[in-house]
Image 1: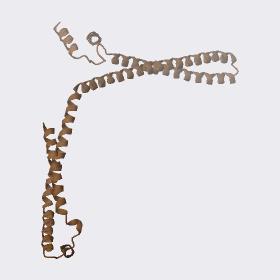
Image 2: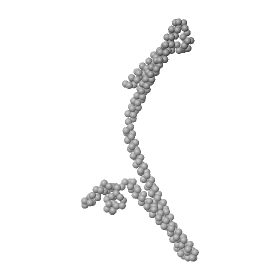
Image 3: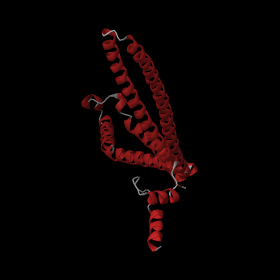
Image 4: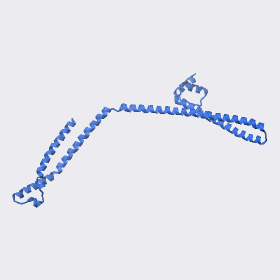
Length: 242
């Protein structure tokens, strides 16, 4: 009894047992292991394929027998044994009918096997699609659209702030680099004033055009406008950081 209990326990833990089992083991396998639809379909298909092979084998035997009958009938006809020829002709007709019948049966069984295979493939595809659908549902559940929108808005705001800071840094660097040009313009203006006081034409001496003379005044006005624009950008930056 202990060995039987042990056997029962093992059968519960090992549901996939070999097919070539003793009768007692096969009984236990069928008792505790419920076959899945896929396993059942595979067994049916194997059985149908075996039936197709058996029918084809029997049909080939009949075709071989038909050839032998044809050969014997020719021999009997040459020997003028017409009674034997008539008997063998009836056997030949019967053999051909059975060969045709076996062929039709094989074709029908193959059609059933093909339909079974199609159903199996469809079931596998449906199972795979169900798994994909569950995975997509899980991914959709993890995607928080409002949170993603908030992240994108924050990114856009930070990106805009960074662009404004880079622009202000560039303007500051340009102002530092332009100081030398401004000093040169002021120097030329002072020289021109001195030359005018002594009655000399500074413009003709140094090649300065009329448009270059009021450069300092224009530059001062431009600096004032740039300062106002810089203050406006700083105010916008402070508002965005709040």
